[in-house]
Length: 119
Image 1: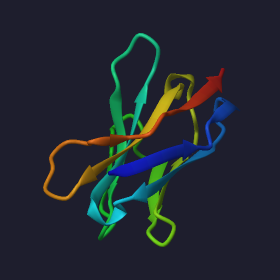
Image 2 (image 1 turned 90 degrees about the vertical axis):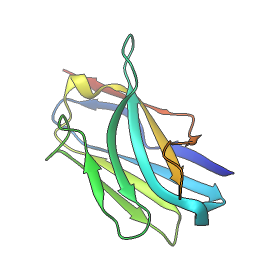
Image 3 (image 1 turned 120 degrees about the horizontal axis):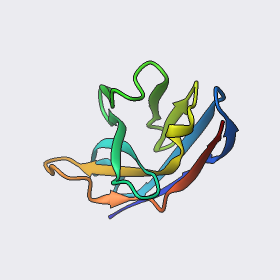
């Protein structure tokens, strides 16, 4: 099992920045990829960004490319999502998720952290 705890959400004005953190614990040695997803009211959960635990390859949704970056600190078992130039449409509950080696789905999820962007 892997446990994930997000932090760093909050209220920010459009154009501002926030950094989300996701601390992993448990069987972290089994993690292949960590991802961030978001869900706005009335919308489906969508992919935002992901990073491979080893090697550090990154992946981004087109809607956040050039504005968001994802990084990891393996020593702290933590993944970060740096969000710059935030827009009102970025407002959502952001979830951290983990995908284990040999598994094609994100099986582990955090509780989510709210990001609110005021116009």
